[in-house]
Length: 181
Image (cartoon, rainbow, N blue to C red; front, side):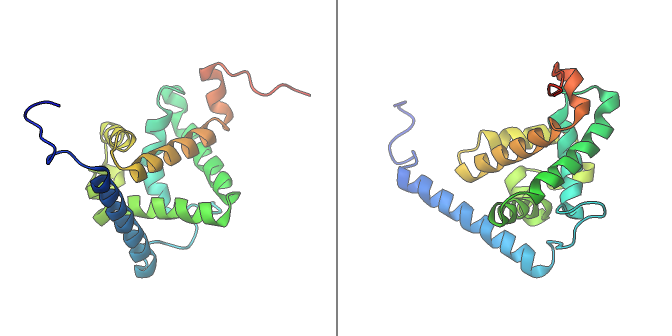
């Protein structure tokens, strides 16, 4: 152990568990507060079965960053739209409990009071640069809090699974498409 660190400055397992428990309680309280206060819109966005307007604002900023490099710049707007519709369809087929948890994640990312401390992004999603979104994703991916790493994995899997359902991405990544029967 480096001499400038003694045992009192290192986190114990108990300390890590306490931080994780506090973070979980904070996120659960924020999600419940959003639901009860009306910040969490329960109506679907126009043309979507599950996604709400607040979800779309966040996802329209996130999806192009996650798809970058997987598609040409010219095709990115149509691929983003197709990915959002595929994501909506995928969410509609989730179990009620998984859907509830996913929508709570979207609520936490939509509310400024939770979004700022958890992502480092204090401004509205419409004004966020791609570099800020990449930083937020990297921050969650490498977080010491398991809850944030799980949130990153969920976002990554949902967006990428939905993205690769769209035919616009196939030629760019070398996938010839499913075999014809």
